[in-house]
Image (cartoon, rainbow, N blue to C red; front, side, top):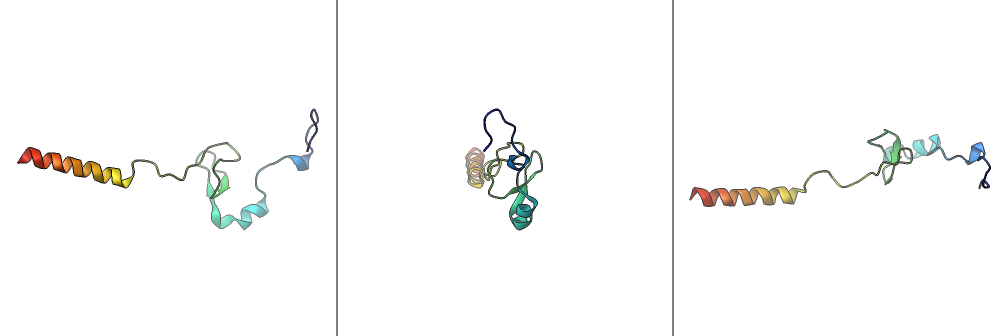
Length: 81
């Protein structure tokens, strides 16, 4: 660990995953949507740009869409009677 006031040694600088790590985990990686850096698939924050990754799908859940269609259908049926 570098001492205060001293520059870190070249081997102490963390430059992200090594080429060996990327090769070993090449089947379980994804690209950061912001900077396109290759990341492990369980990564929550990009090590390069700091972008927070989310596993939650964008948009409304399917059940909310189905409920909205059902409500609209009930209202339309009531108005057309």
